[in-house]
Length: 208
Image (cartoon, rainbow, N blue to C red; front, side):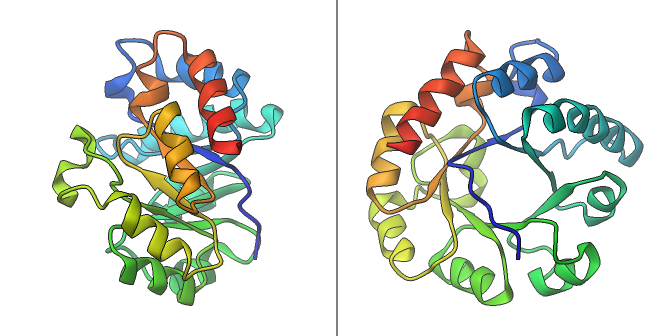
């Protein structure tokens, strides 16, 4: 299986860039050191999402950044060197793995300890677990799971676990202290006035 080694995963949402083009914001984040980007624009048509993925792929490759497509195995296959990030209720990891092959990263979103354990047993390369803190973007997933739940599940699995939900640079240190491999963020980078600086601060916090 490929190795997921990024301490910080940037999840895209072009509605949170403050009117700035997503391409420009991602480009700044890459300059700040981001090495993994998950393309998560669920309201786009298939063609528009494919075009965006290829546009971001052109930025990611020279920067040595790993690109993942949210839930769309077909679009991951249509975009070179691109992995897939599955929802918790999506295709089983084993099915996605058969489709994309052994060399592409397959990640999973999980909202309970049981989902993390299942993702690992099915062969996921990493898991994004949350929400850890309260955040508007994760209200539909229920109340925050908290650092204690994160700590418990991190002690039970070997694959990288990234904490998501309300993560800031200050909180990234708490998430790492609970045993997480790293963090995943949306607004903390996309909405930041200085995207490059925000990325650097998060990476420093998540790597300490």
